[in-house]
Amino acid sequence: MTTTAVNSYKALTDDSAIALARTLDFFPEGAKLESQEIGDGNLNYVFRITDSESGKGLIIKQALPYAKVVGESWPLTLKRATIEANALRKHGEFVPGLVPVVYATDANLALTVMEDLSHLTIAREGLIRGEAYPNLSKDIGEYLAKTLFQTSDFALHPFEKKRLAAEFSNPELCKITEDLVFTDPFFDFETNDFEPELRAEVEAIWNNGPLKLEAAKLKKSFLTDAEALLHGDLHTGSIFASDTETKVIDSEFAFYGPIGFDVGLFLANLIAQAVTREGEKREVVLHHIEQTWNVFSSNFSELWEQQGIEAFKDTAGYKEFVLEKIFQDAIGFAGCELIRRTIGLAHVKDLDSIEELERRIALKKQVLQTGEALILKRKELPSIAAVVALVEEQS
Ligand code: ADP
Ligand code: MG
Ligand code: MG
Ligand code: MG
Image 1 (spheres, rainbow, N blue to C red):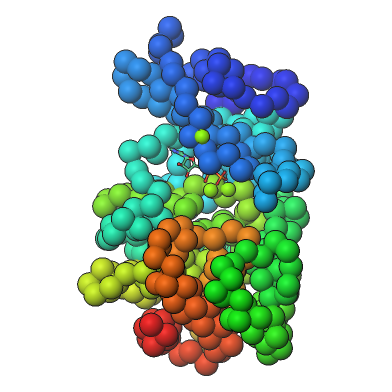
Image 2 (cartoon, helix red, strand yellow):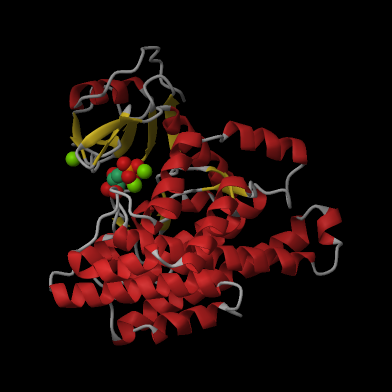
């Protein structure tokens, strides 16, 4: 189904969201509908519409024409709503159980109507409370392998791949990542945000020539390696989870980029969670880190053998070369993500919610060191187990 609206853009209200929901073939006629805006309000509205009798619900996400950042607003393309919906659908072709169903879209209103996942919890929130989410890394490893392999030149005809790369051209959202992940944290930019107790460490980063050189190489890879249709923002706040289910949402940053970026972003967010834990609870997250890579690489390998384009498949050693590049990229991108989530504009709650100042600062220093080591040593680390050992060494 598609919505019938032909209006030009207008921000939804609870009332107009309910009216829109009634035009879809979803709720019974005359249903008593309620609306609640549940988004965090920086870039997008998220309305949850529920039928008070059956409890049945749906989600209407609407992009706002601006982003509210550091008290200011800057214009931001509404096209990202179409990118998000189309990426959910494209990825859903390969992992239908790991993304929400998209019921309807409206490009003019910049909205996506999708499955209500309110029975699940945002993984970051649950992990901070100490949840284990036993399926998380198995599911995300599979999500990464299938979505990335199947949208790459290793699986697609080059015409189809380039058609998709053009469809998912997303320059404005990419620019946010280019600045906030790869540039600003490595220079004295006013968007950076860190506790005064970290100033010496931060200045050391700004003065670390070899580190900045490696970050520039990683940025160039992000800018130019159009390898696969990425999610583009795969942190633990973009994942709904429970003990049995995993669903990836919020793909408005989707574009054709380096495969290791999605992998690395997820790994970094697991690392930022692992360092806050101790004992067995930490082991659970360290295991997720290893398992994500192991499941990703074995699924990717299997797809390569079973469905890969012949000329690549039949070239001895090429699959190993590709997986090695993805691994090294992922580790480098993870390092950049750790640094920017500690001293850049957008932090992670895993670290910021630690109330005791001394402990928070100690952990942030540790995360910065880990991030630096991952960037600098990404080509020497022989395995994901060595990455986990490095995380452990820093603590
Ligand atoms: P943004 O791009 O603004 O970060 P998200 O897509 O991450 O928006 O959604 C913001 C919040 O809205 C999520 O953290 C979640 O609480 C809620 N939400 C988003 N999509 C759904 C959904 N399909 N079902 C239930 N809640 C959702
Ligand atoms: Mg709200
Ligand atoms: Mg989000
Ligand atoms: Mg988003």
